[in-house]
Length: 233
Image (cartoon, rainbow, N blue to C red; front, top):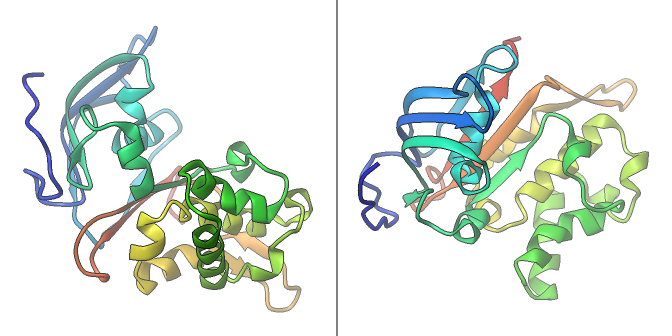
């Protein structure tokens, strides 16, 4: 794949997310999960990856957030820069504060049984002081209307409430919490709808996986959002 040049936030490619000729094959797989993917996603874009199960949607989000090739065994080719950094050469802990990923089923990414503990967990892993963690919890819960869920058991939440907590937790690492413009926060907020008659919260589309990336720039243009769906509605 050739020598890698040092990357700064002023990436060689335009855009928060830039993929060039990306191909990836998992260990023991007979076919590549991704083949010759070239894609640029500018700051401020919200895009949709749509296709049947197994078409490579989740694999591409793993490339974007650095899990491929850092943690995935197999064959990887091409060049991926995210938030101006080459995912093959930058340590994963430098990418983590810039990302939030939300899986199709929120239960698959919970580490705690309590809402407050779950929100605090990513920031605690980064070694942030308690005061900063509490500030971020306040900001996230106010932004997504989940302040009333603090200290509640995750197992007693509705599906939509669980999804909101998962989104909030994904934003706790910092880059997105401080950089996400209201327009994009609202995009995420409206993925969960509330029935006014019953107060029941449901996902507008439960089959989705989002990776959000924060970048340098103005507050209005420093975030990109990817949504992966099995079908459009």
